[in-house]
Image (cartoon, rainbow, N blue to C red; front, side):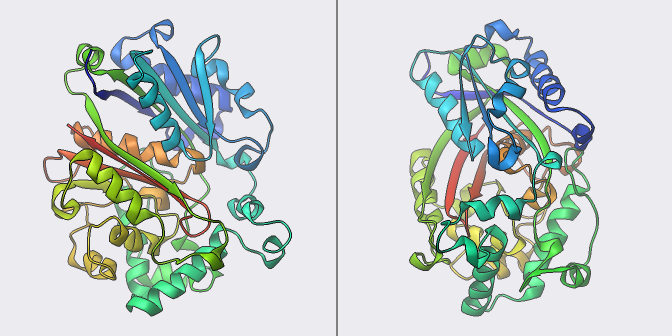
Length: 380
């Protein structure tokens, strides 16, 4: 038995999912996944799903609406809430335990049937002291953005340019929800949301199902000629109370260092070939790049200006379009895994980067101003 876990297949929904009910959407994506490698449902050892009850699904016992369609019926299976990269790790650990040789991870969000994201995330706040203030993810991000700009001299135009870059990348991604070419001026003139954030600097509310099939090393090599290997992982969560946190120096730096150490990465700015970063708000891509060690502290704006993070740059960031293009809230972390997989296997189609990718980074975040962060390192 090998001691590695490999990704052997990936399947994603297209924006047309909005026309389907949740069970059908989950069924077709999981069927496509298993068909790709000729595996029957009965052959999958364990299934881990990532979904949400009341918050991002608006219903209780959400798994009762999709469990059979995911293949989890009468299986050794489990469901994880909040961040689908947690579900990914859970599945990897099940294989590494030696009890299973295959595992399927399915993440889903039906955003079109959910309350608005700000309505949902306002419920994350302390109900007595903070919720009455109107704190939600967007207002928290606005406070973080203002502090970031003033502390490091980041301009509004640099923040807006992230939207320009990512929605431009999404034009080449058939799985993306929002795909259009925009200008910096259009981004800055879009509807004000929470100063200094405008509508086009905030991620949309999207539908999405993504499924990933994992296998133990010996099994992975039988199922595909080019598995993508799980190399590193770390996650951490900060307090939800904004006043107790340094919004410009959160948990991500620590998370990244641990993930890099596990993967044997010394200099991420040169050793990471492509990064899929969750940026629910445009400026956060710049800040997260700094905290991931892809550029110096305060250097996110200069990194963007240099063109290094462009689709054809030395270190492409969000060639898929990122969360600004597709924000299936619970599923967005596993989407980053899927997009890293496409780049590593040279199957990203028109948004394939102009370089050979050996190491890819997938990142996910949720909570107020990056309260929780997860980083996964994948390699060929």
